[in-house]
Amino acid sequence: MFVPSFYREPENSWMVDLIRGNPLALAVANGSAEDGPFATHLPVILDPGTADDWSGELPGVTLLGHMNRANPHWAALETGSVLLLTFTGPHSYVSPTVYEVTPAAPTWNFTSVHVRGVVEKIESTEETLGVVQSTVRAFEGQFGNGWDMTASLDYFRKILPGVGAFRLKVTGAEGMFKLSQEQPGEVRARVRETFGQSACTYKRETAGLMSRLP
Image (cartoon, rainbow, N blue to C red; front, side):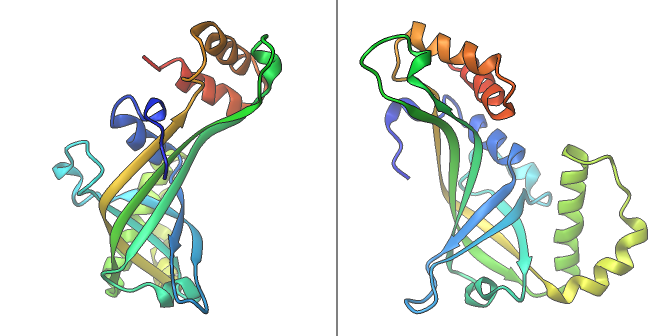
């Protein structure tokens, strides 16, 4: 991903926060010339088994994900192959009317993180179940209502043959936080204020990130 220097994250935590807050990734792999490329939307979490070893840098981190085994992407995925995960955070259109200057051009403020890594397909039934359970715990804690999965474990085991789980050892990560940094301070402030007062959730979330810029 091409990232101009002024759109880079102020600190590493921005990329981690974006992934945790927007964990539905687009997984992309080349595949063969006849069938590829493959792209699949899937939920991704930080491996809870290695969380204690995490230093704050994404390279070296292990992520966990899963997809439907009936998906041709799963069959094309091989242990040792490279997978790209893209995560999209807050974003919104910026109208030139906000700039209050002429000439001007519209643009789109957006945030995104691209993560590359090496895949390890998980073949063990128990390990696959562990990935599913870890995913439930992570998302119920952050987005759900504390649902107790205990009574549904037998159901999990019933559908498990259709689940393809994998680990991804992160080898590289890039973040793009395009938040009007190229604009003069007074213009950037107007964009932030306009977005912050909008009824659109995306605009308000984008304004929240803009307010955290140095």
